Length: 430
Image (cartoon, rainbow, N blue to C red; front, side, top):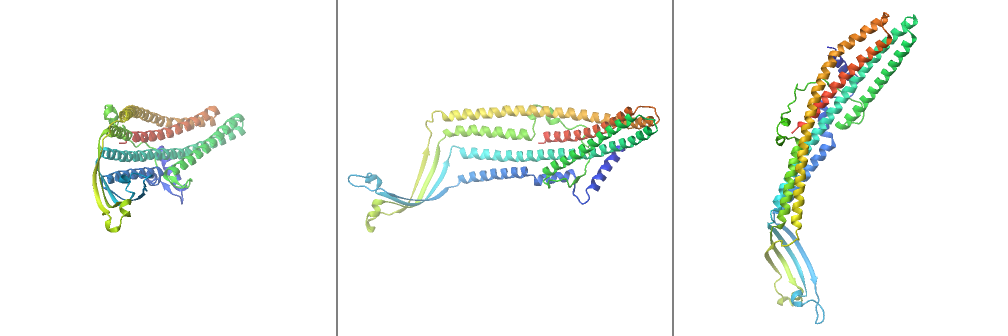
């Protein structure tokens, strides 16, 4: 019941202090981050670039048409110049040229497959960026909540010590307490005030970090509303990570799988360098020689026409360069497979570690919550006994510090559970 009351007080404090200022929930922070974070927009641009590259490659299937013009002068005489039978005194040309690849050794298809894989990979990387951003926002949101609630706890500690200091001073004046008790209490009060200032500093820093992530103005003129209570399932579903390693998948594994497929296409591309290529070539327009132009108009041959042809290229010898490239690409693919195996082990290990941590933190939280009532009763009882002369001031200060430490430990444990749950969600996102 006291936990609920403290939480309601915190929410009321947050809303009251945010009068005229924006108040953000976690969902609102996530929405702002997704729409305003530059990293997400950058991944969207990368996807669009890959799509444009794929569209550009598809245009090479169509006939390539261009206009060509040339003018060549080749003088010749009895003692100098090119063979007139070959040079014809030069050439003049103005043509529309058409080229169409009939068979390119399968290179275009393989490159198209690679670009398709690149688009899928970039889409996965965009999801990774969004997932990581969600985790970062949740982490900073939890830290802002924790530091805000710590301010309240430290303020409670300061007021407890102030009240106790009043008692000590009254007893000291009548000779029922030593002046050293006053000094000890003033020292602990001073430390509590420093802790309060430190909590206020951490609260401001957390708000700056959160503002940076969600894209709002970099200041602290906003408040947040949320809870650190553990609302996750008693046991998170770890089924994807307790089966065989081959069946383990998350976003990183999907990206690695796409990278392996792309590297295998690199091997195929290198092997296809030895395939023949066939090209259709056609042109239409004006083509004539210098000798023809020098003839009288009525004696000149026709200058306008067209030509068609096929060009075939078959690689013969490149001194083993293709085989060397194939071996390089195969080694790259093998390295990616090894990295994939390491990644699988790393993710499996990390998820199992988090599972143990969450379980232990929940057990720790239950113990702290059970101890909290005892710590509160112990402080009140010890303070009462001191007022009656039945105990030492040092025991009261120790009881007060124990109470404060228990409350802070409970708060930190709640925050740790929230962050661990967010980390697990980050790891198992597919």
